[in-house]
Image (cartoon, rainbow, N blue to C red; front, side, top):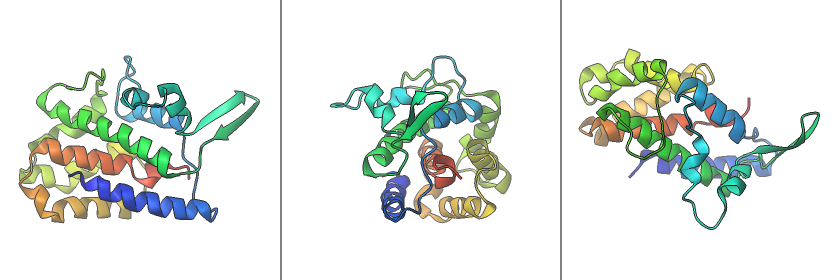
Amino acid sequence: MKCSFIFLVVFCVCLIGFSSSGLANPLKGYAKINSIVHERIAKTNGFELGQYLDKVETIPNGDLLSLLGTYDGSDTNSTFHNGAPNTLNMLLWYIAFNKLSDAIASNCSGMTTDGSNLVLIPQFAAALKPLCAWPAKSAQSDGVLYGFWSAILSYDAPPEEFQAWKTFFLSESSYQGANASTVISDMALSALYNPYFLLED
């Protein structure tokens, strides 16, 4: 079971509670998050984050993307819609990030297996490579863990967010003997799903 499923439940409850009281920051929106993924993680060779929602049934993909936060109207008179976190858009973000995380982790074996055309940018591939040695002690060093964390979040989150993330994965016994693919997928998902990555400042 993905550790971040727990994060999903807690995160949704907190965000929806804040949103209902007018305290939650809005989502960055699909276009901005997709752009950040291209800048920090994936080459733009046909890869789009939204393709991970292609197989979600009952709602056309284009309509799904609009639920993740989009602008409508002209450049000079546009309005941001669906920016408030809610149960539906947070579930959709979870689905997209979950599949992206699995694709990232599969690069440890040298290739992605989900047909997503995901090709990592060199900087992200370099940050991922030493983590692929998990559960070796070298993969659990501060330098390796921070390199992977910062490759995703850059300087978006305060230092205590990294410390909490690192402590969780180093202290959770189920990860100590787990294979690298499982651990990296969970690490990536929990970083992508962090409010500092997903929400506006």
